[in-house]
Length: 179
Image (cartoon, rainbow, N blue to C red):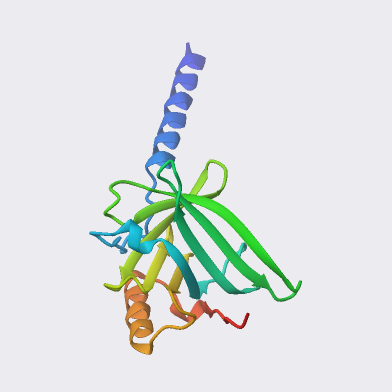
């Protein structure tokens, strides 16, 4: 009889862990995704101006992301970057889909099968030329531009927004675009 209670308790714990992992937030606590987001205006090529470095982009410069709409309604993500040490281009193709309504810039992105990470546009200008993107935690942040550079005023505004959320902007890698 005691074994049955232990098994039942473990099953409940397992269900709790599963439900918690399914409902895990895909955006940092103080961040807010852009409302009235226009997916079609966001599609196209973006230059990575700055990022918090992480395993999959370490050592890359000339990094870009290109977003295009797939027939099934998801967004194709085509990331490219130049590996300076190995003198070659690297590319990674993934997919993105909205977490909820498409007019809220809260998405999840996958490059590895069923595993998704948060991708949240938390600031964007009216012309969709510059964007500040938060990952699912304070470990991931990107500043993007349609051009290879960004005006100092936009840079300052985006750094302030990121710092107010809790990002350590001093750790940003400022990407070179030389190729």
